Length: 483
Ligand code: ADP
Ligand code: ZN
Ligand code: MG
Image 1 (cartoon, rainbow, N blue to C red):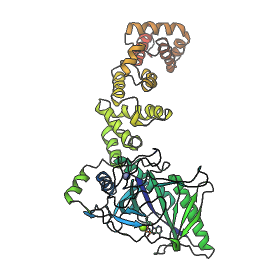
Image 2: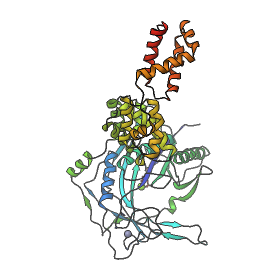
Image 3: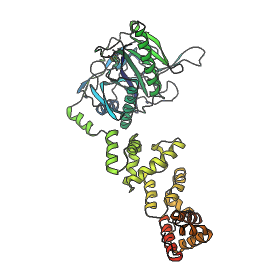
Image 4: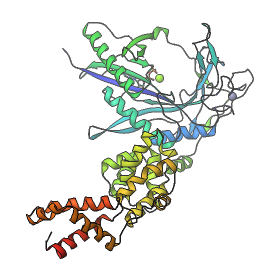
């Protein structure tokens, strides 16, 4: 049996989160009543004229720069002609031969190394409306709220060699685009969509095999599964002496299989031509440089900086830079005076757990970075113990109150009065006579029982360092032990 090599290229569509649509002033918003965000332009009325959304164009160029693409100085929109009931103009405004961004690449970390995948192009287009098929007595209804909303298409080179690489590519791409805050990038909700192209060829063969395009996946895992199934299907077909036909197939999430949707013979001829209603877009080299200089720090770069600058582990730095708002929160806590290590520990060990449990995101976190830093300062300054800090943390989260306010309300200020602590130590020794016996017998660890007893008597408020110190002192001075 000959060994086969897998070849994969991905086409990703991102819904851009601009306030208005691509060529008109209608609201670009999901979830409104059907056909409420529409006007003559996005309804495709004859004689209406489109106007380019400048923000969408900037987003596309930023995305291109983030993907190391060559940003075009001259670009235009073209009409892609086809008929479908969700497309009132009978053409989609897209880009054909002069996209906003040309070749680039994306560096993907996997299995401890880095893989570089080529980007073919990044272009802008408009989305179509939506057909609603169910619940209307058999007929289909058309909702044109989505008609004319901005879509960014990112096309990769056929550079991936396994479904795992395709998955890793998508994760990295999503992270990079999320850092720009130009899209929700949510595949389950449809703001990120992915068509996967895949072929196989005998190992060592230079020419690519015939590709198949797969659609209808609603998660990165589904893309991975669809590709894995398709690779198995193609290899089995070739080994059975069949030829692969170029076609589009649909992934069925239940059976985890792909089924044929249309073949090349049924493919459209789109009769692309330049849109005469839209002026070409020009961009100077200086403008490109300015936009480049304003890009956010890339997640991988930020991760390495966090580890080096704040002395935290590479793993923690990775967790903190997974999403830009989380990384921003971390640095805001540091700006408010917290040490990097303390901020990392509190965020990763405590804050993220609270956020998960409450199904909230960091962008609507009830604990402000300033409050987190204040909590750190209370512990650093020995006003409260670390344990009391952990105790009040859920209340900080649930109420949004400043830690100092909670500490004062509950009388949780740490006890650092040695006379008060000495009294508890003496009582702990009196209540636990076995400890002295054990210590005399050389079992040094027995003193831990005294620490526990004192902390319990003080309801956790005694300063632990001072408790240890006073226990030592009293054991030596009063009981003649050199513990
Ligand atoms: P089409 O003309 O069918 O749109 P393109 O050449 O534009 O095809 O490529 C579309 C996508 O398919 C790209 O992401 C590209 O990397 C990928 N692709 C092209 N050829 C192959 C192939 N033989 N195997 C796998 N993927 C491919
Ligand atoms: Zn409109
Ligand atoms: Mg193509």
